[in-house]
Image (tube, rainbow, N blue to C red; front, side, top):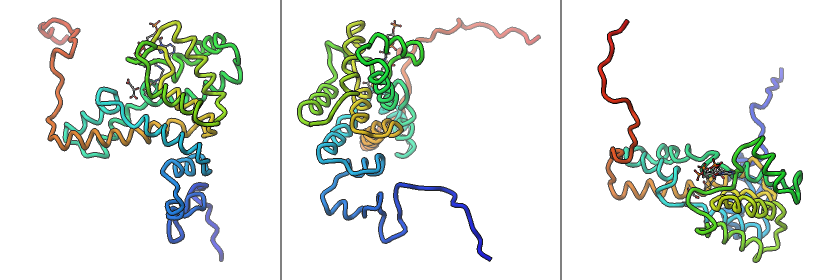
Length: 262
Ligand code: ACO
Ligand code: LMR
């Protein structure tokens, strides 16, 4: 008799059963031959539709601008530590990836989520939004930077905001709200600026990307940087890293004798 088996998984994304993979029905080679770029493929696979030319120019800039931020930041440093310990590329890059979280690089999703919520629930009431965030969430995702501030602005943020607002016709209610939040938080403390995670999150919401995709933009972009750091350390035959004592505050007990076990 006929055996009916329930499918194990359901996909709405891609199909490789033909001669080549199809992304949401489009042949990968046809996307290439018709002049689409990697930013269009990202939008197709993550947002299930091809963006307009203007939208894809914004997506491309978001990826370019967040690809790397030097060796000192948590992600790159994690990868460099791995590379110097002789760890292979995928594992060393994943060590860096592990650092992407609520404080570093992984605040894009929640920034987009909460700025969107604020724009809806607390329009024209930034103080109300901040009070709600303090009570229910904690630090506002997308706000604050360890070294950037009003006096030392983050040029990536300045550029992205200016590009989207002056050189495109994108409607930007979420970004506008994030900028209003920044006005209030940065007046309290000058490093509480809109950071690159917050800027990306707000713009991606305005572009219509699903909430769950937003951190993916930092993960994708920063993978480019982390791979670069791994290659860089390997090309230099870098030695194992071990922290010098002067970089550690040993707040420990004085040396003492172990008491007899009772
Ligand atoms: N919202 C509200 N208050 C904040 C925020 C925030 N987002 N960030 C810092 N503060 C306050 C803290 O409560 C603290 O206040 P206090 O002095 O009264 O205790 C003060 O500012 C200093 O806070 P720290 O955590 O010491 O600041 P630090 O410079 O170490 O933090 C960080 C930088 C981790 C980015 C922080 O601002 C934060 O958590 N922001 C939200 C998460 C985020 O957006 N991360 C992405 C950063 S961009 C990137 O990684 C690419
Ligand atoms: C980054 O893009 O990695 C930075 O904004 C984080 C940092 O602390 O500089």
